[in-house]
Length: 208
Image (cartoon, rainbow, N blue to C red; front, top):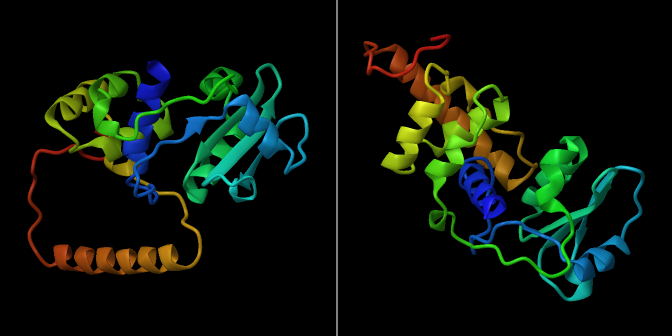
């Protein structure tokens, strides 16, 4: 199923940006019953999307519930609040045609928990090199396996993927502390690199 392939491919790339749940469960479209229950916890406008905890219903995780004119009810459920917030933003800004996989379904949707079950090379072949988000996804998927790398090299030939690796801001707290440590380590590494000769490993050059 194309939607499952795209979800798994995006999740594999997302793992480089956010903390994916330890269970490996991917976000899944909401079924009607869960959507109606979650919708009762919020209020919305013409085009709306809100994140609610499902704890009050006795279910684990978070629900993203919304309405998109021209499509109708949309929603998703996930174990991660961070991913839920990203999905909410996705529902609010993306064109209607790109949100159709998130239309509310009559019954719960079964989604595989391991991205490795999906052909990531095929996923890459459907990415658009002209879109910044797709370039960022391709950049994060590099090194997954040989077939995926080959697909990236073919699909993103002459594209600078190094400049596409810009992670979104993380929430405050522990993740911010970790990001600060990572930035300090990167600064230290750059200072170290400046003291040694630069070698050309044949990789892409900015603007190349």
